[in-house]
Length: 260
Length: 94
Image (cartoon, rainbow over all chains, first blue to last red; front, side, top):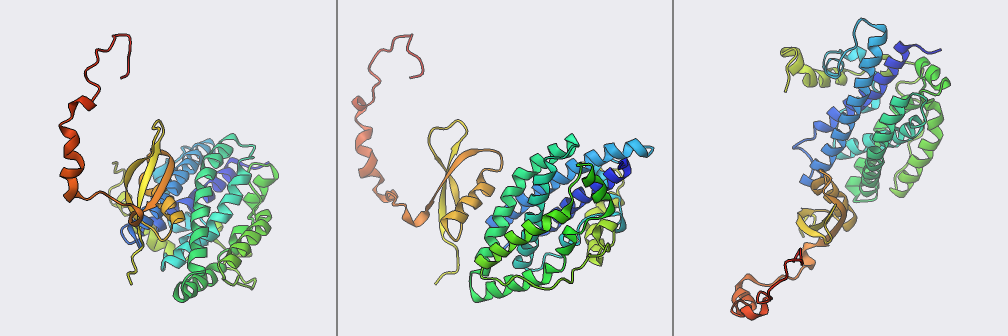
């Protein structure tokens, strides 16, 4: 029987990946390659921020069941240090160039859609509800990032080279997405969560198809960052996350309780 | 050769509107991406149910310089407006 603490941890995994990627996309504001892309990418970021808020709101309620009080959305987002974050290592990777950002988005979006499509069936009604709402948004994210990978991959010599480099560089962070930790397995057994190991095969198939269409070579090798239980879901992050959080959290840390 | 993406004119049919209305323009490499960009630039607040995009270069416009010969002649012909018929009170929405 899974505990509320495990459920809380699981909800943080879901919320943190959405929040951290949202913040990364927010860093593009005003720096997008063209105005239209700037707006489009920010829309994706805002979708993810909205999803993170829903996961955090629920996480706070669950936390109140085993702790003296449950934390609110702001406390969870702005007052935890990097070691307490449960996001995937992939989403904390710096933006790099536009091909890097799109490769990161492409890997994540396809995984995210597979995950949410399963969480819609969750026995936990709240998880199913949040997943259903998010799934509609993520279906569009998938379309957009896939489109860009194909356009840049099957574009000019320069865009092809940059897209291939981005796809290769981020590949090692994808292994973690399919590496289930104890909490995930416990919740998956009760049909509350999703066993991410089952997502590996459909994900690899779709990713391989898209990369083939984009005239890109799918990276080989099994060495993957975050495998064997050493990853973001255990709170082991790269130093880039710390810097990102410092920027993101500075206002709440400097002016505790500040409100809009 | 210009590296700029071509300009597209965007038309959106709103929730209750019958016809597509011109809402603005944007840059995109092709029609498919013009639709996607329109979705993000012009329908963020649930404005639309359908989008048309047309390359700006494909629109032929009347010239502002010809405004007088184009439109002035109809101005003096009030009899072309159906304003001389008394309408029964029961007829609404006209």
